[in-house]
Image 1 (cartoon, rainbow, N blue to C red):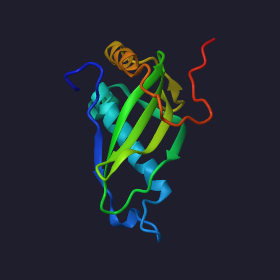
Image 2: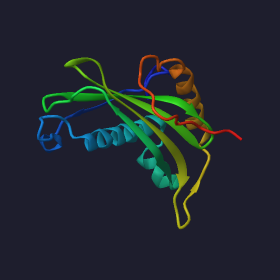
Image 3: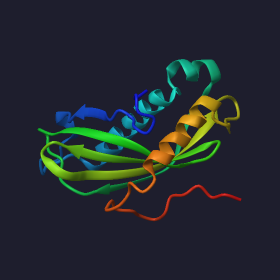
Amino acid sequence: MSANAGELSPYRTAIAADWIDYNGHLRDAYYGVVFSSAIDEFMDQLGLDEAYRKRTHCTLYTLETHIHYLREVKASDDLAVQIAVLDCDQKRIHARGVFTCARVAEPVAVAEAMLLHVMQGAAPASAPFPPPAEQRLLELRSAAAGTDAGLPQSRKIEIRRR
């Protein structure tokens, strides 16, 4: 985990040659691959890592994802994805990933996802986060408050409260 309660380490990756399309740009599907890998690293930083998954049989399932393609990503680029927690409750996370590369000053993509904490088994079912992960999520949510200025938003992803 990051030393600062409000920050996570960004996920970083190089662009694989077979991710590039006939225009010399990153294929749209690979933004999803990169975002999925960034969510995996986010899980590790939350303590929902491989050991946790083996011990508890719990993991995160993705319920919904939205991706905004803002700038071209080329084969020579490296990507960084900074995850932020926009909202959370006892079982769900509304996360945003901001994609950046050194060649471009502005974000090259923005993705959002709704994630559900699930206990796997014969009949997978949602399950509450363990207290340490829930506390960390609340810290991250507070740190992310108001950080979406200027970033595109699509149809609203939200945690509906009853």
